[in-house]
Length: 98
Image (cartoon, rainbow, N blue to C red; front, side, top):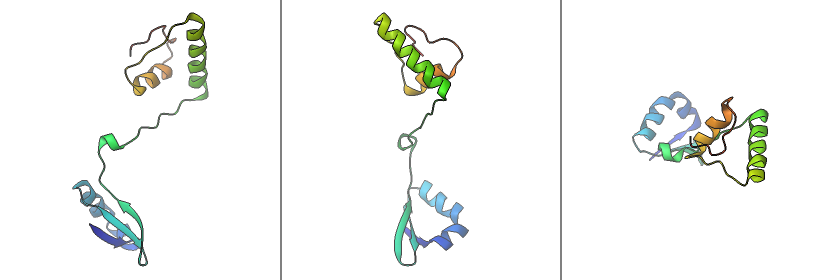
């Protein structure tokens, strides 16, 4: 574990990021107080936030309403696949397998 001041971190940021990538934890300090950490992460740690435009959200709600009316459901293998389907211009299918 490294403990560095914020001022020092500004000048050594690349080095500290590389240390975190190697698995080390870096603690940032303001005066003598610990205020933040730079920690290693993996792809599983990163939460992908997918935002829909208003048009895409409208398409989603229209698709859900149509499903309820037909008593069917769209299914997707992943959240990313669902977002790709909503972002495409093609109409949502009755049973989307993306």
